[in-house]
Length: 126
Image 1 (tube, helix red, strand yellow):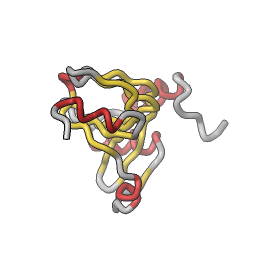
Image 2 (cartoon, helix red, strand yellow):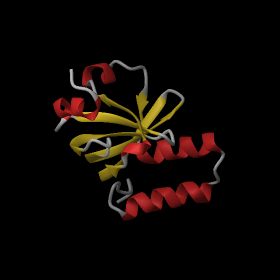
Image 3 (tube, one colour):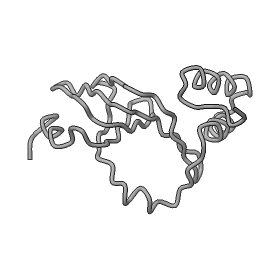
C-alpha cells in the first residue's frame, strides 16, 4: 500500500473513474498524475445517468485539476456489464438529461450541435 496519490502508480494506463466536485463523472485511461492529484485522462468520456439509463459523451484528452477531484477508482468491466442500467446514445441521454434538468430544447440542441462540431458524434441521417 502506498499513501496518497502514489497509490495511483498501479493504475497508470488503466481505465479509471473520476468523480468531480461538481458531480460530473469522467471515465478515461490514466496517463499521468502528480502529488496534487492532477490527472491526465486519455479517451475520456463523461458518463451521464438519468433514471435507469446512462450515456457516455466523448471528450478526448482531459486534464483534471486535483482540487476538483472527489474520488478516483478503477473500472471493472465485468461489474459494469452486470449493472441493471441501459446504455443509450449521446443524443438520447442529452434529451433525457435536459428533461430531468428542466432545460429547454434550444439548450439541448446547442449541446448536440457542439458535440457534432467537434466530430465526437455523427448524424444518424448521414
